[in-house]
Image 1 (tube, rainbow, N blue to C red):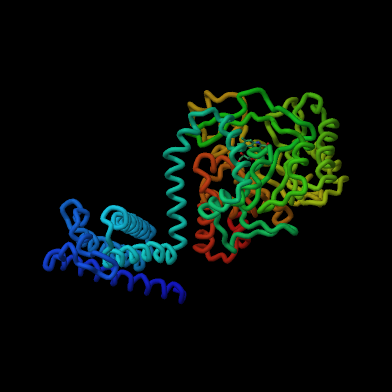
Image 2 (spheres, helix red, strand yellow):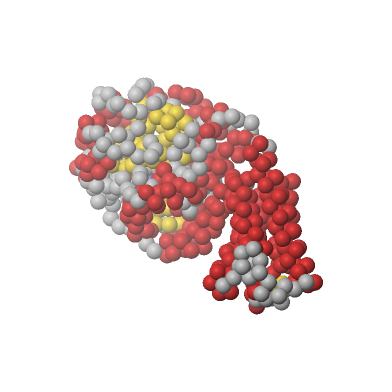
Length: 516
Ligand SMILES: Cc1cc2nc3c(=O)[nH]c(=O)nc-3n(C[C@H](O)[C@H](O)[C@H](O)COP(=O)(O)O)c2cc1C
């Protein structure tokens, strides 16, 4: 225990003793030496307060309630300190919050209703406020977890049920609108970071010249309008990918473009690179810096005209050229070769197609690191063939495993839901297992040649940690946040620190590939 913690602990014990003595004195006075109504104390007419009708609650004098309150706080404080249990700490937070609320109410009564003050009651109010603050300062970490749990509770009780009855794409568009707006308001940003941000030196990651405050990023697809970079650093993300952006604007596939499979913990995605095109995005974010690193995902414009290999490559190259010429301050690129929802049958899977694409991009001599976003529905050997090609291009920094799940036979689907699912492919839990297998495969066969970004079905710190132990250096997610709430990013980061400590790692980089 640090010196600071010892002082805080001592201060809490002293405050508890003062509170207990104060309440004992008032109890004694109540039963054995009732004060006259006009007994004048240091601050005013003490007797009027102590003999008012408000001095009894449910037939029991407030002084006795005070004794119960301080005893309960002392008991939970002792249990919390001895056992370190999060449960007892939550009881302690709850109990001190009750103490504070009642103190505020009784002070209000003295000022506005009774019109007189009692110094013993004021002392109790000060003691309760002091306990409220110092206990939260002493157990700051647990208190943050408690707040996150409360946000989760509210999200799941109220917000999620409302969101989930509204059309999924409408909710997504609203999220972008409100996300963009709140990112522009400093007060909202600081409110969000106060509750949702979590920083820890064990989690920072450096790739090239870029320092990522933590390894959790928002995956491509949720922010194809570049709406979120203002607010996401305050929500606890370590970085985000904007896009996928294509050379030309594109409305995407026909509606419905987004659906939900709640029992399978998955989203049905049929967006087809809906985005406003490279020019508009460049105009929007050009020259801007945000509170964290960000990347741009680039893919081919989803129109029939780009459906041949040559035209698709040319279209992708044009998009890269636009960003390279621009003053957009992105820290990395993603090359999306794996979107399963595009018009035409063109695939970058065949290694010769992939090679042609990468050769064309190589000629651009990109100034920033490039990650290739990989499919997960391919067999191990198919992925090996792709990685073999990619590994020959030195300018490729890493690979992302991976994109949406195409395989409707994955065991994590709920049978009824998958039978009824319309056109599109799947995020969330159905993408979890296969992305893990491919992270492991890539790490086993290529070690540190590729920086691997793990993506697919991260809902908890355990999910995230598993991807790291299989070989991922960084992580990305979307669906877990939608199902679990915006506080989930901080919860995962916290959980990662706990896992690292339990396993004896000093930094997240030491855990990368531990189970590969
Ligand atoms: C609504 C939505 C749109 C997506 N669009 C893209 C996209 O444009 N480009 C891309 O590379 N991945 C896209 N994805 C795939 C995600 O980036 C990610 O690979 C996938 O959702 C698995 O992660 P998750 O389980 O955490 O959601 C999209 C996913 C969702 C849910």
